[in-house]
Image (cartoon, rainbow, N blue to C red; front, side, top):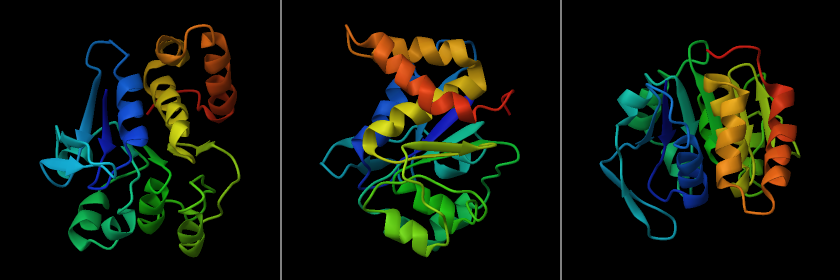
Amino acid sequence: MHTAILTFDGYNELDSLIALGILNRVKAPGWKVSIAAPEPRVTSMNGATIDATIDLDEACAADAVIVGSGCRTREVVEDPAIMRTLRRLDVRRQLLAAQCSGTLVLAKLGLLADVPACTDVTTKPWVIAAGVNVLNQPFFAQGNLATAGGCLASTYLATWTIARLQGLPAAEEAMYYVAPVGEKEEYVDRALRNVTPYLEPAAV
């Protein structure tokens, strides 16, 4: 199972890298997590530069795709080449998730036309303007689509993705590993409380 985290120039580290860290706690055979970008190297909103491990074309073939957020997402959705590539994303065969301003990408792709979504407070007006009903909660999923709002809600996207692709026990184990000492049960319980109401009975 391959998960691609779409990471653009100006990316938010708390979105892409927290999800990357949690997802990589899964050690199942064939499990792979990649940073996908339109360029070989991208720089975060705070100046942290990372190398992409795959391009957007490869990301479109992944089993799950998480669209990270950043300070330049409105430029991303105005880029014809990027959006043309991302139109190959298909919710019928993939899990598609978005974090904060990444929700705007899914909205502009027409994937949220009939699905309410979560996003951050800054991006909310733009997502509403794109015709999407924005919820006042950290996480929501319907079928193979999931969105989260607020940087630290990236833990919920990671939990949902692992649960859908690898099962709920694997998601619990990954979250337990990264949760603070002395608060592990509390963190795991919070993640499950937000995610399990939206879990489908089987992965894609």
